Image (cartoon, rainbow, N blue to C red; front, side, top):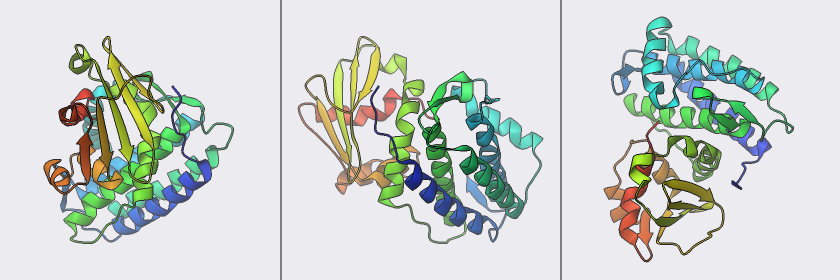
Length: 264
């Protein structure tokens, strides 16, 4: 599977910048506010800190304690019961320390090497960096929204997240949804990568060039696509305003693309 690989230097630079904005926000945030779902800002801050603390060891050859990547939400709920830290500023300290350990462990020689992620699934090191960037970007937005403060996610950052997450998508394919499908998608993120999802025989392959005729082409603003993908905004507004556009021989397939993957 030949996929776009985010550059190491740029990825770490962006991760450090966004993580720095995130921890600055945590140090002045009200821990009692509801950040997302039933989680308070304090709980969300601890959750993100636990992910940051886990990842340096994965780079060094360790394995994730999460046994099933499809039920990780339940795992994190259980971990929040175990970990009683509820001070966002102290969670920020954890993140700062873990980020230093992570960046020290990441080198050009291991950037594209596979490591053991949740459920024993293998992903390259650059995917771990992408996940950490996504955690700070999305949850920074959650907390900033709760605080009525501004929060920005740049197009460049969203494109880095997208490229880094591509290797993980194969572990979230909804086999029931694709069992009887025969279709090909082109997904182009504006200012970023173009990839192809080809589905046949109950299998989904992700490619950087098509091997067959494309049925549905999707052009999307990367930040909008990220927020829709993580359920922060609905898809109809972006569709109506042209931020996500489906066209081609079978444009209606565009509405099905998200259902082909389990949510993380």
